[in-house]
Image 1: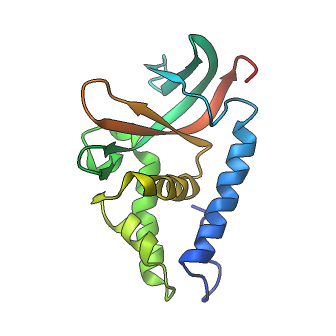
Image 2 (image 1 turned 180 degrees about the horizontal axis):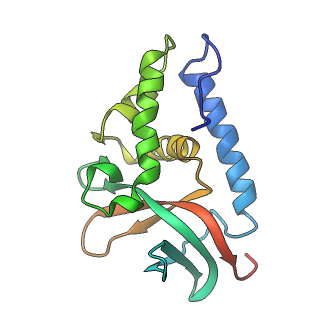
Image 3 (image 1 turned 90 degrees about the vertical axis):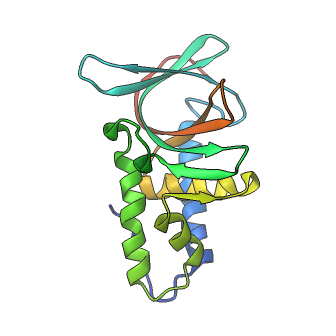
Amino acid sequence: MNIKLSSESETDSEILNLINNYYDKCKHNMSKYISDKTKYDLEFVIDDNDKFIVNIYNKKKHVLKSYYEVLGCYNVTSSIWTYSYATNIEKDLTYSTKKIKKYHKILKDSTKNVDLYLFYTGNASFFISYKNIVYLLNFCLYITEGKWIMSYKHETDNIIEFIIIKDIIKYINDV
């Protein structure tokens, strides 16, 4: 993991700048594939090599094929976030979230004022209001070094699953 605290004076707000810069870079890089303003349909498959793939569709038009992992789930009713490593999801889908868990030790061993990120990394499941979920997702994108994060709403309950786009396999159409 190449994400490190760079100085003794780094605080929550300075980490937030790093996170925002990473997010902006990812948004720019992904804009050639997908738009952050469009709602996409996701199809999850396993390839012949047992790799987890997401096919992304815009109005039934296939636009992107990518490897993915599950970041976590958000229960809209209870406002509870749960990282995928703390669930019964296939362990190969949770590798990146273990980086978040490991990052807690880096933060804990520092002498910096990083309370918000200690909280995010120190708990497998926690209350977070929906309006603040974007801060958590951007932090997770930064720590996992993902390409992008997308959401998938389960039809039968109030759960939103968030996936990390890892590597683009195939770009199919213009945005």
